[in-house]
Length: 504
Image 1 (cartoon, one colour):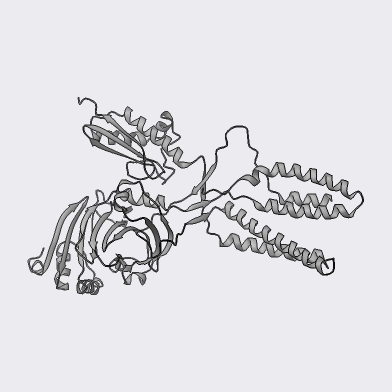
Image 2 (cartoon, rainbow, N blue to C red):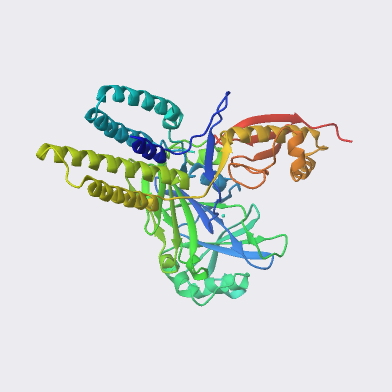
C-alpha cells in the first residue's frame, strides 16, 4: 500500500500556495510581435472595394517611389498609422496558458480504484478502506485549488505625355500621387522613367498585361527626412475603386521580392479564402476604432489571412473568393506550459480509458488478467508516446506573464500620461506634443505619475501618439487640447479636453 501511495504522489505536481487576499490572475501574452513586410485591408461590398496598403521598405536614401496597379480609377485617401496596429491587436491569437490539470483527477481515480481493490482483498478490508477514504479526501482538499483553475485566453517628357493620360494628381498625406493610364505600354514606361520611377525590363510585360486588361496605375512618391538603412513604414494609403471581385494586386510587387510576409485583412458580408493565403481568424465582431468603424459599416464579417509569398506566388494577382461566414475560425496558440498540461491530460485520459476497458474485458472473460504488469507497462508507454505527439502537434508561442489584465494596466498608464500632460509647459498643440514626447522618454517620470514604466503592454514598445490600443492622440478643437487614450477594449476609454493656457 505504501508503494501505491508513493506512486500517486510522484504523479502529483508541486502546488502553489496562495496567500490571503485578492488573487490577481496571471495573464499570458505573446512575447514577440512580428511585423510583416506588407499589411493590407480590403473592405468590399456591392462591387466597390476599398484597398488600404501599408508597405515597409528598406534602403539608403531619402526619396522613394511606389506604383500600384488597380482595375479602375480610384479615390485616394490617407489612412492613419494606427489602423494596422489596431487590426493586429484585434486579431491577436488567443494564448492558452493555464489549463485545468484533469490528469490529476484521472490518476487519483485510478489509484483509488486500485487501493479499493487491494484493501478489500486483505484482512480488515473494510477498516483499511475507510482509512484510505479519509487520506484520499485530505489529498483531494489539498489539490482542489489546482483542479478548480480554468483555462484562460490569456504599411514629364513631352513625347510620352501625348499618349499618357493623367487622370488625377494630388497630395495625400506625405505622398505625391498621380493616377495614370495609357494605350501605349512604351509611352507609360517612358513617363514613369522620366518622372523618377525606376522601371526594370522585367516590369514591361506586366505593365503591358495590365494595360490590356484596362487597369490604371497610381504612382506615388514619398520623402524620408533622413538617409538611413533601417526599415521605414509610412502611413497607409486607401484606394477606393469599382471591381466585380475583390482583388489584391501582386504582379509588380513580386519583381522586387525574394519572399514577402503579408497580413491581409478582409471586411465583408461573408468570409473569403485566397490561396496561398491561410485563414488565421474569421469572426463576426464590431470595431470601435473610429476609422475602421466607418469603413466596416454594413460589413459584419472580419477575416485575417496570412502568407509568406514566394516570387512564384506573386506572378498572379490575389483574387479573393467568398465563402460562408458561418465558418468561424479562431487563432489559438499555446504557451509551452499550456501545451504540456493539455498533452498530459490527453495521455492520462487515454491511459485510464484503455486500462479500465482492458480490465473489464479481462474480468468478463475469465475473471483475471494475465501478465498485468507487462500489459499496464505497455499501455503506459503508449500513453507517454501519445502525450509527446500531442505536445509537438500543438501550435506554441513564447509568452510573457503579467499580473492582472493588460487592458487594466493600460488604463492606469494612460491616465498617468494624461496627468503628465498637465505638467508639461505648452501653449499650443506643437508644444504639447514636444513636451509630452520628452516626458515619456524618461522612465523615472512614469513612477512619479503612478505608472511602473511607459511601455505599452498591448502592442509592445513605448507609449506614443497613435490611434491604436495602448496609445493616445492629441488634437486641437475649439481652442482646446483634446486628449484621447485608447484602451485594450478596442475603443477610447478616456476623452478629455484641456483649455490652452494664455499665450505669453
